[in-house]
Image (spheres, one colour):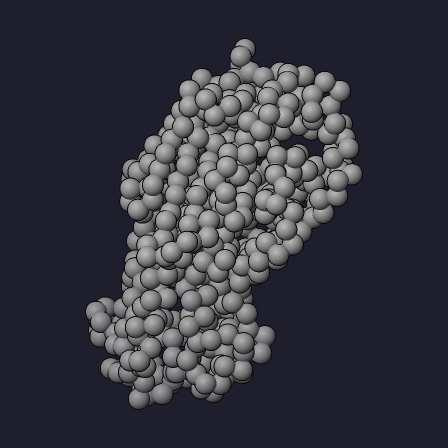
Length: 522
């Protein structure tokens, strides 16, 4: 996993600093820290240097509009003199939001990378200005959102870059230490706590991204189950791995059917977090789709962009990251995380269109499309989950390409049988800048899933309403009175270059923060 930047709260600058970052609200520019000679940041700077900063700061060059990031640098051999100042515009206070601040944090990180900065100071007193409370956000929520933008932007996947290559070195030394400087000593402890929370968030999202980015020749079901076991020891979770023999005993024929065309054995991972000193905690079950590579099976996919199908286990990566983050945050609720890991391949033993499989629930399924495999493995996992008597079940999956047609790459779809649960997940998503949009689950969408020779079939005869029909299939395995929600993250799982704190290419790690937030607040 890439190293996170070291985050620390301070009341004084210690050691050599490459740059200082000063957030500026557009309507509080006259109150911004520089360019006063008395400012502790500029002790030792010449009057001429201070006048340059002042002239730049008061000019129209720096507008302080949201996302405007500009700086000044001058040459000096004196290590005790600050020679690089970066101003980060936050726009008008009245229009402030956590998501806007996150994006500014991401833009600041891009600036630090371009400047090859290793040690940075962020002056956070502007966030504590009383006038900034004209927004609905607290001081610490502003700083936390800014830090999230920085940390989420710092991720790089270079595991398979050859040692010494230009790409392997690029970015590796940038911004190793970020100090958050405040003159208010009373804020340091609270600030440190929030920085620790953000560091945990970065760790969890980085892990989710790493899992999803893992090439499928390395990232096999066995690899991920072994990694899950290692991570469970590291983060204090319990872990149980069901082998194929144990899945046979559990009657998970849908999971086994999807994986039977691969030489890689399927695995079923069960992780559990139990809060300490909490009597009768609520139980939340997370289920993640873990197709480590999806060729489509006999219903093989087109070759164009098939390499992206290593991301078909992004649902598994998301629920893993959320579980780890929630455990680091020491949430008061119990979490059970279920991940069926399979590889969908088309060899001589693969399931064929027209085959009938018997699900763990006892229902029979006619498989008319082997590329509609995610719903099969989730169906068995959901049935297993309900035996655990949870308060709610949430499954996360790159289930349908149709969701990108319906919603594009701006939000994921949510479908389920409980409006209150759906609303709570959407609220958690809004807090984290991760949009979620509800789609209906009208029973009529299931009419075309009726089979002539089995209880139901796994796909419809046309492409209409594909995301809804995928969820309708899952609903057939949800028992009465079970509170359930399904997140289809297919469009949001990778290549989210439209948001500055996500990698332009590769896994996004989206919805790790949302799920952990939901678990913490449930």
